[in-house]
Amino acid sequence: MFLMTVLLFAVPGFSAYAENHSYDGKSPYYNNCASSATTKAYTNLLNGNNEKFGKVELKFSSTCKTAWAKITLDKPAASDWNANAWIKRNTDGKQLSCDSSGGNGRVLVGQTSCYTPMVYDLDPRSSYAFGKYYNLKTGAYTYAYTSSY
Image 1 (cartoon, helix red, strand yellow):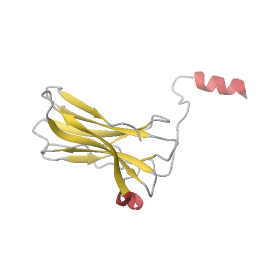
Image 2: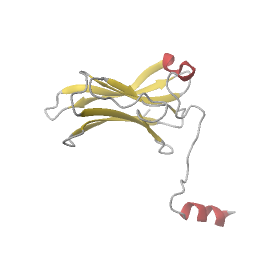
Image 3: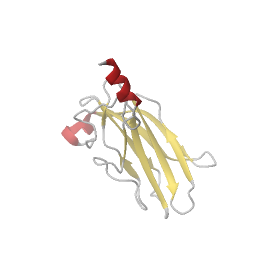
Image 4: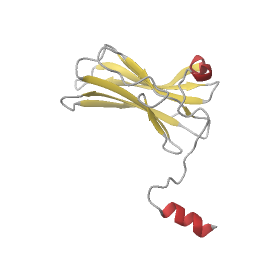
C-alpha cells in the first residue's frame, strides 16, 4: 500500500490533496448563503499614484461556512479595462474566479463589480481573495490580495 501511494504522488499531474465539498463552485446566493455574509478581510485597489479606485473583499457566510471574493470598482470600468476576482482555498489550492461557473462574470466596460463562486471554508480550512484590474490593449494591470480567513 505504501509503495502504491508513493508512486501515485510521484506521477506528474496528480494532485496530492484535492477537496470537494457540496458548496464548492456554487453561487453565494445558493441556499441563501449570501444573507449571512460578512466581510472578513479587504484590501484597496491602488493606482500607480497610490490612489484608491476600488477594493477586493473576502466574504464569509456564517450559515454555510463558505468564502468567496468580490471586487468593486469606485467607478464603472473604463474602455479597454476589465476586472476579475479570485478566491483561493489555502489547504488544497482550489481557486475560482468571477468567470467560473457560479460566479457572475468578470467586470466589463461600464460595470463596477463581480463575485466568485464559493469554497467551503470551515476551520481548519482558510481562504484568501485577490483581484486584478487590467487593460486589454496595453497589458497594464494592478493586483490586490486580502489576508486569509
